[in-house]
Every structure is written in C-alpha cells, then in structure tokens.
Length: 344
Image (cartoon, rainbow, N blue to C red):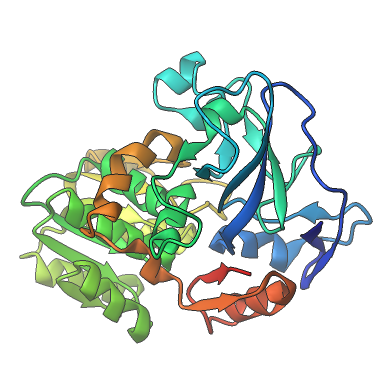
C-alpha cells in the first residue's frame, strides 16, 4: 500500500509499505477513505532530524472495515468507522473514567509497528474499543464533518468542557486555527452567549464568526489583553480556551481571564514550563485542559453533526489526493491552508 512517511524536517514522502495484516485477535484492518493533516503534524515536519526509519504520519482518519480479528464483536466487514487519534481498549480503569488517552493497553498511530492515518489502509489495534461505527456510507456528504470526531472537534470540545463553559457564559478563545475554531463551535454548543475569538487571520476569523464568535480581537500580547478587558468591562472572561500551544498564548490567557476564572489549554505545548507564578496564584486562576480523550466525546457530538446543528468539516479548506500529501504539508506550513483533507 501507499503511505506517508516523514524522513526529516520538510521531507515527507508517499511510498510503498507492507499491507497491514491482522496480528492480534483484537485488531481490525481499515481501508482509509478520509484522512487529513493536523496542526500537530507540523511540529515534527518542522523539526525532525534525519532518520532512515521514517515515521508513518497521520492520526485522524475514518474508513471501511476490510478485516476483523476474532475478538472484535459488534462490527462487520463493510462498516464505516471513525477512530480517535489514539487507540484504546475502552474498558480499563482510565477508559471507564473517560480518559482513553491514558489507556493501559492504548497507544499512538505511526509508531511501534502501528500504521499512520495518512495512507491507503491501517491496522487498528484494540479495535473493539477504538472504532466507532458511523451510520452513513463511504460516499456520505457528512464524511468531512465526521472525520473531525477523530481529533480536532473533540479537542476543541475538550477545551470548552474542561473549562466548564455553560449557558450564558462569556468565553475567550485564543487561536484561529482549526482547534480554535472547533473550540468556538463547542463553546456555542454548550450555550456560551458571548465568544471572543483572538486571531488575526481574517479568512479564519470570518469562519469563526460563522461558527458563533461574537467578537474578534486581532491584537496580540498586551494590546490584545487590553482589548479583551475593554470588551468585558475591565474584568476579563470567566473561561479562556487556549488553542495554540505557545508560551505567549498561555501568558495572554492569564491576562484575559478574570480572577477566579479557568484557563483550559489544549494546544500541544511547545514550552518546557508553565509561566504561572505568585501573581497568578493570588488571582485563584484554575489551569486545566490537556490532551483530549476524543473517544469519550464521539457519541456525544456525532448527533449534532448528523442533524446539521454543526458542520465542523468546514475547517477543511483544501482537498488533495494522497500522492500530493507533501504539497498539503507545505500549504499548511506556509499558512496557505487552514486544514487539509486527504481524499482519493
């Protein structure tokens, strides 16, 4: 089969690799029909040192079941399924607590002999707990929207959920990438009345407004903090959803959150330490968030997609074939694309 491999920074290739096979009774094999490039894929794309054992890329995908291990029940060959960006048994103590990202039998795609999601096929470990059946066929118009359940929508929802966004809230979302826009959508879904989106890319923030943002603040740093404070009568907002992952974004979050408020950070952190010291301590700021257990949210969010309440697939603004995946990475790295959909 063909699959995406990363050799070093800027060098991503589509090459022939062995076809996946059932290795354990808990496995399944999927024919991938939709996948995409994640913003977090850009971190190794920018920084990977050369290796002659390239990583298989991609962790957001959905597909059609081609083969099932003997222990996988409740699915049949031909089912269309979505999988989260980590696999899990969905039965261990952590999974039962809704923390499938800490599953004792779980893991990540593209390493340790596990296929990535940017390819033609993939072996799914712990398939019974990982896969979620979709009530559509492989040609459904909802596939781009349902694909977001594998990561980006659930990550935005995790920010809003862990921050405790509730009906009538005023929320600040920091970041106008696909996760930030998903956080806007999620805050609106949870009943937020006012959503301040901090971002400076007009095409993206326009989509954010369509998703539910009521205010857009293009300024950054101290100027951005001052603008949010101005919009909120000097107080800031009770909840802040940090969807970037840079230290400057977290510092900005502390500036716009009101005393006693909550910051939920879901941007993959690119900093070694949290810049919170005695001043933040004195303000009783709660810091929460973390990596999103997407598997915990899929069944909750799917009905809102299927009934048309939300269309999160609109974050995909470019579609490419698998063989053109290198151009997709370049487009996202150059900020010419928000999020790239891979569909053959």
